[in-house]
Length: 301
Image (cartoon, rainbow, N blue to C red; front, side, top):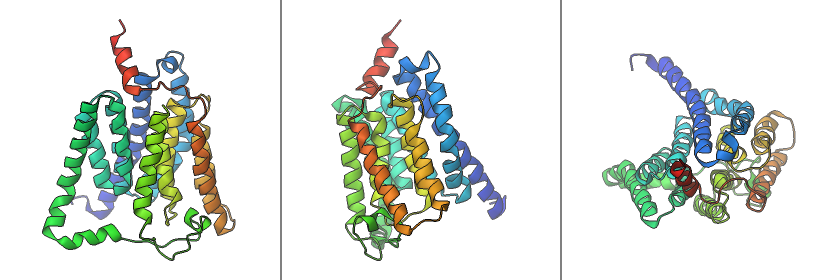
């Protein structure tokens, strides 16, 4: 590359930082379409601005501090897909979700966002588009070298800070059942949020399932949590302030620089994820069907 390694790194850092702003802007656009009750008096803008205060430091750590481009792309494509879904654009939503999975396979449970399309035909169209994009990216590698399947069994160290340790899993490395369990639990949590009419919490609960069962404890994992929390705080919660985003920032990110026993970090992760389950039973200001709400807004004179 003409810019060299240092130049390429800088470009990716700038683009990654900008992606965080795009995510916040997309959350606002989703809110403008689905929450007319918040947009007229400025409450939506205040919620997003408040969430940005605690969202951006975590995002900058991901995009600039450690420059994990794959995680940046997975989260960016997911939020873009959510907007496409609530705006009833099934093919675009499916393609974006497929790109998110191509960037990071742990994004697979986000496929449940396609249910926001409402109509069965639209959901199937989105799912087919998603499957085609994933297949187009990965199938050539599997066909060219069957050993590519070894990547499916990649394991990492089960650190002493993980919630897995708190849950009683003391394997030195990733247990063979762990990755499938993350996907199943994440999809189940997202489906439950959709069923309960808490669609803005689908990303938060799916990411929560990932971090609570992940043997790794990298600080940049929290970026996915604050993206999901910001979606809920801005679009679903009835609270005026972004308590879920702020709590994730303080308890899962800032706390990592505070001296404490290793197990305490695992307990903080477990407690936060379990607390997220309360969004399923607490009152929500979001409409039951995001897509229906968008259509209603469009039909108004």
